[in-house]
Figure 1 (cartoon, rainbow, N blue to C red):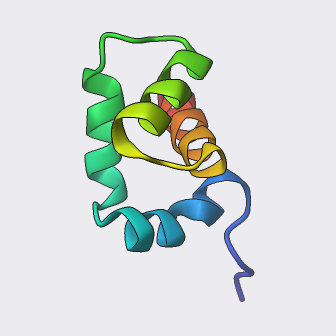
Figure 2 (tube, rainbow, N blue to C red; figure 1 turned 90 degrees about the vertical axis):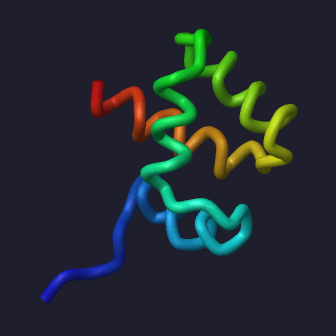
Length: 67
C-alpha cells in the first residue's frame, strides 16, 4: 500500500488544477527558460505565470533535481 505523495510532487495535482497545464508542460517551460538558478526560475514562474511561491518552488525543485 502506498501513502500520499510527499515532497515537491505532492503539489502537482493542485498545480495542474489551479493553473490548467500538465506538469510535463510546466517542466518543459522551465527547461526551455534561459534562466538556470532556482530562485530566478521561481521568480519567473511567479511574475510571468501568476504562480504562487510554494507551487513555483516545488516545480523548480523537482525539475532541477531531475537534471
